[in-house]
Image (tube, rainbow, N blue to C red):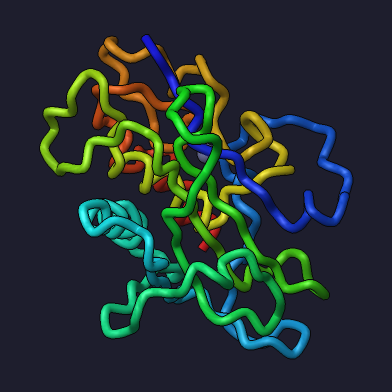
Length: 240
Ligand SMILES: [Zn+2]
């Protein structure tokens, strides 16, 4: 069965060339950076773990409800960190999409071109990038999610996901999980904020054990990764 990576996570620690932690632990609590989102002032920059977000203007209308579903999966858990879609604001202009500075506008989600034209399952389906406050690389200022516009996504909410489509809701839940703080360079799982592929929580599909939202890959025709599972919920609560 075809599988596709759902993420590459780029974190400030990696951008800065920081040495990744050597030890790999199975303790999923470690997969969050504690307080990655905080409320207060960091290096003179106002921060907030109630994170506003919007779309960029090329994010297709047909996919927007699914993106909101993905964000809401984490909000429903009810921690102090949450995502807030700004319904009364215009879309972001894609022109400034790559910018990242302490004066960065606000939080944004993008359906930008990702990868070469012509979908290949070897391309990631989506990618989350974090913008960190420079003087404090542990505190997030912004995030962005790119979705592969060439991927064969299922854009519905039914559980009848076609066998040749990837479930966008599941992918968005996964990416917002990264935006919430599951990040690269961490000490557990695959080092990218994921469980290890083929571990107990990420079995091959088709069995009786559901794959968790933060497995490193997803499969077409499945919807079971939409809602975070118990481990993921506990880890999120532990971080916030
Ligand atoms: Zn991921």
